[in-house]
Length: 398
Ligand SMILES: Nc1ncnc2c1ncn2[C@@H]1O[C@H](COP(=O)(O)OP(=O)(O)O)[C@@H](O)[C@H]1O
Ligand SMILES: [Mg+2]
Image (cartoon, rainbow, N blue to C red):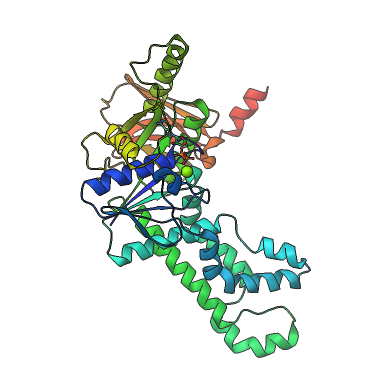
């Protein structure tokens, strides 16, 4: 089963583009399931149908659902949560606050994601289209089972086996609530689920992320950051959809200026995401509700492409620590080994090789470092970062 995830800043048209993609996939004969993990559900509005927590057939080859994240959270987390609450009570946190604190932010969305596994296992669908919450925060969360481990180890300080043997002693010496087997089982189940979903989503042949942007400064900036982090955590972006572009034929003087602004932003989009294909959808003259309009949008975005294909096999940006260096490698396609110009400005890295330009947002770890060297290696361009030497810093201060 192919999985297509759509993300982008709030309001850019994620839901609409995801729905349009689903309509096209279904028409091409793929059994298509469309779902949403964004707590702000709007799939139903987009299709102009009513949707609930159950899978509903909304057309030929097309099914949809709007996950009730709260219910998923309840059924997956309740056992664990009760224990966390009793722990928090034990350290003196008030009941109501303990209840609030016992839910990790983003956890409800995590559970919606684990639902994917159910659809994959069912064998009923060829493609699963997911309308995600903005900026893929959750994917980041999901990519870090270690963080989850860290959290869990603090709640369950003692391993299961140990607890079983020494529980009688523990209960005599402390009044601290001690997790029982049921809770350990729930935690383990959760772990396994998250790991399976993470593997599904970071397998580039199965899953692709499509970033939806508008020709606007803030929107592009956020999408670039999302792109960097998705790459870093192993998710593959196979297309960027630039939505709401004012069409060529518009000649109204009021909008002509906007056309120029859009052209400029489109250039930035190319420089930020190339070689990932940039697909486009114009600003329609009405809201896009219902299958007919979604189909029009889908055709405009994908032309005659099969929407379920992997549209681009990216070798994402990678960062590794090598001795004193942090080495960032990025593949630059179509690039002759020309003269390289690489420099960092704030949290961004500007790269120019010959006439090719690209700029990316640096991950946090690199933002405070200096570019020391840039050269071509097997994996593409390698940029080496290191701490600024103290001698240099001193010289600058003087
Ligand atoms: N290209 C477009 N032209 C006209 N209206 C659009 C376009 N893309 C999205 N819309 C409209 O914009 C609104 C917000 O889109 P939506 O897909 O819900 O955004 P998001 O899911 O990113 O918050 C919807 O009413 C939708 O119909
Ligand atoms: Mg939406």
